[in-house]
Length: 383
Image 1 (tube, rainbow, N blue to C red):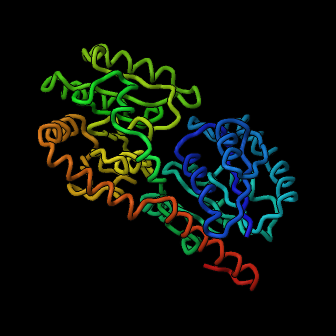
Image 2 (tube, rainbow, N blue to C red):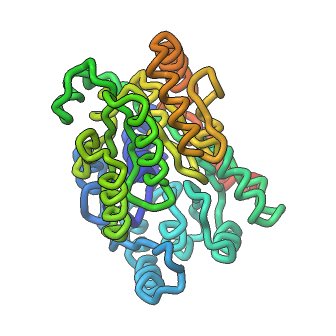
Image 3 (cartoon, one colour):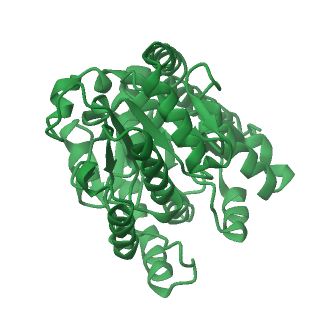
């Protein structure tokens, strides 16, 4: 069984890390993977895993509007390239890792099952509804995404949706020691560090992290803070500047550490005593799983995907509305109660190892692939 994965993003965001790990793990489930992605970091990482990769042109749909001519023009050209790759690869299934990738793939070969992997809670509804009609299967990366799709798609489409939660490779969390991770900050092990990991996109609410940090600093001057994130598509330089100004105005400059050059959060997370994730409307929250696998206690906004990942008060803490002062209060509580923090860390790691591994994702996807191939061979509409 050969599956062609398609993505039109060249950089490594959460969706691309998930693609990378799943493509590397599907072989154990009897699936031969070929990928079509733009040249860049994702292309190189796939190639290093020995996965055959074909280049396509990058297309990023701006959040400023899907009507942009550049995006539309690129999507119009993409299907011809994808068609050429399909003729060369002859896949049994095409798996599109995003809506733009799906749009580039859907006008290709009607006899090949087409999977649309939805990893967003913000879709252009009219386009999404039209795309869903052409999908043989729709994979929702979390229960929050599933609920969103139920709201926006036709009831006739809902039988094609399957929830396959994102997963991570737990081995990555165990590959770096706390001491090694702390070297990035030049801090000794006894200094408390509270961190946030998220690309510099405003909806991630880094400003809420800075506000929480200011309150924590007021009560615990010994605490340091780390913000790990890149301006991935060079769209939010102004946001980054605003955050730097906030840090200075809050009097945090001497205890605030910026890391903007790292591609792999798993190498930094073990340095943290607590991870904060204040984003609202988070589709999944991959970094929460990475932190929990590294035995780092997590505090997240009670919104979207984190509500699936975290069992309130057991494997982490959820804060309604991601309210900064409340997140600060919960953080201070964990720093003052190492036993409770350790209990959350143990429960968090246990939960990730049992529920959110890439091996589990691969097993579920392989099952869906086989069902689609069986339905195609019998001429039945598998809904």
